[in-house]
Amino acid sequence: MNDLNSLMKNRRSIRSYTNERIPVDVTNKVISAAYFAPSAARRYGFDIVVVEDSLLKDQIKTICEQGERTWVHSRPNEVKDSILQLPGFSFQKNFLTDAPVLLIITTNPNHPNIPYPIESCWLAIAYMILEIENSGLGTLTYTPSICLTNRRHELNEVLKIPIDDHIQVILPMGYYDVKLEHKESHVERKVHHNTYGTPYFK
Ligand SMILES: Cc1cc2nc3c(=O)[nH]c(=O)nc-3n(C[C@H](O)[C@H](O)[C@H](O)COP(=O)(O)O)c2cc1C
Image (tube, rainbow, N blue to C red; front, top):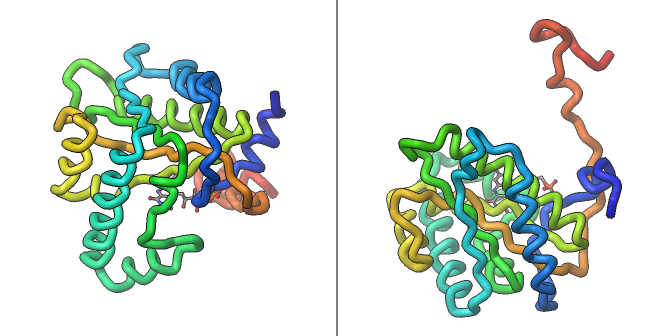
């Protein structure tokens, strides 16, 4: 068991994985972390698709790569440039086939009976990310661009996800060889004291 603060500090996005298999109890522990998270009205308004099948992973990769190329090139130039200059950015999404497990988390944002489904879903995602780190594995908060377009149904079809459910994230999960250094937090300047504009940290 790791100290929570060092887990949070050391966690980095991992985009390159080894093909070492993940013990099933580790995968199950990560999944159960989602259900320890706070959830509006205790409804846990999300589903998790655990993808291990190589053929499916190939299909997901192809759809995500094509979707991202189309989406990025449809953005205004300054947005496009800022995406292309992101550290580690590539149109190649090898992590989708290299990682032994993909956790695909979905929710219906317009569900009539579940309050705050997106918020609850993302809290569960955060818990899973920390449990992945705690297990000595890596992950990436991957939000496929195609899910922002009217072609998002292509991924739903391959995975047989109901059309009203939106993929929020794909978490590739696996072991890795190279990890980036931990980063210093620069968030302090966004923290205000009593009223907005008065710095909390002097
Ligand atoms: C909501 C959200 C969406 C993200 N989407 C992507 C993505 O689609 N592709 C990607 O490579 N990284 C994605 N990331 C990862 C961020 O780029 C990464 O967290 C950020 O650069 C900070 O690096 P770190 O996670 O190593 O601390 C996403 C992160 C968040 C929180």
